[in-house]
Length: 189
Image (tube, rainbow, N blue to C red; front, side, top):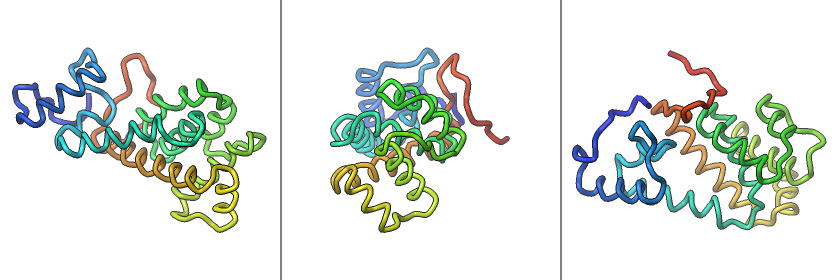
């Protein structure tokens, strides 16, 4: 559950019901009656939900970036925001898409994964710079363009921005990880 007020479909507006029905059709529903992830909070504004899901679908499947790099960028973002659901959902996917477990372990430990492949290091450096410094130093910008191209860099920035919004939504509404999944980050009272 989350701190969001639980509402049945009948308690939703007609517009929210339509968005809810679409989500149930696309994603299914968990045993507790929720969608999981940021989807329940986003349904509070159907247009926001629709647009965010569209952006997420684009970033998840239609960028020029390797799928493992996208999942690594999502994992770095989830770690930065201490987002339990984001980390639990995407760190395993990063490994599934070819990112070594040692790289994911370093990210979790908030350490640069020295010894990783160059594109993984550039991804890590870009994501950390955006989160911590809120800018890209020229040398890092140049490395990112050589590694991913300008298009790939802007797509990575899109991934970081989108999953920052996802992480903030999950944290603000205290959305919990799925059943049987241990949350990696402690939450305050």
